[in-house]
Image (cartoon, rainbow, N blue to C red; front, side, top):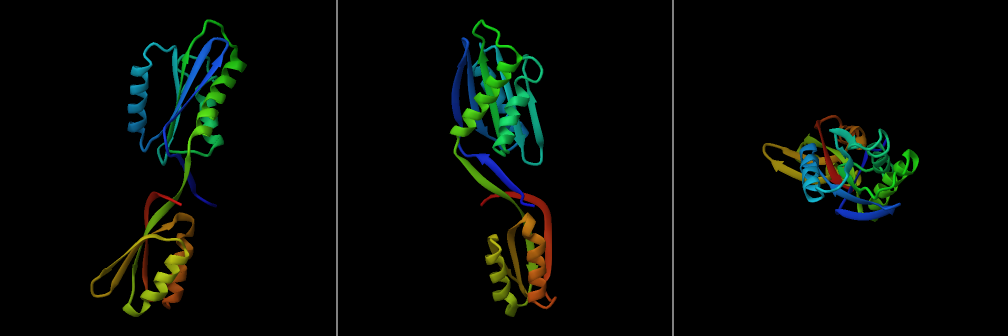
Amino acid sequence: MEHRIFSSENNCEEKLKEKGSVFIAKAFRINSVDEAEKVLDEIRKKYYDATHHCFAYKVFEAGERFSDDGEPNGTAGVRILNAVNRFELTNVLVVVVRYFGGTKLGVGPLGKAYYESAFNVLSACKRIEYFEYIKIEIKIDFNQSSSVYGILSRSGAKKIETIYDNAPIIYAFVKLEEAGKVKKKIIDATKNKASVKLGEEKFLLKK
């Protein structure tokens, strides 16, 4: 199972008009719940005269949240979240600001308008692909360095760093789904002489 993470790289804006109502959709790259809430506060202040400020966001390892902000239940927030999931995005906030135009759209058309607004703005964003990585620590003998570096390189490891003490200690980031295989390959290549430790914390790194 791949642990691919996607995130929008730039902030985007798209507008949709439906029977007099104007829907302004904005997408933001975020890194935490606090950052998402801060952006939401700024949007509410900027568009203080709007009828609704509906949103959905997903944050890596912190979950998701959405809000209809006064619209009929299920017509806004979850529809925005559906668009986010359609693009397999995380670390992203989508806000759809609505200015009511005087004509009620009905539940179906209203939900469609919110989904299309979110879908359109995410389509306009440039998206970058991330993977989940964990840190690996490898203690080896000097004569094992070449084979271990080769295994790490072929596995797509990133930020490889070596500290020399009594013996080399190699630190690197490996893809989460490849970590177990990499560990086994290193142990086999060094005839069980290497000490290999896998960290528990996950990191988002570009592909």
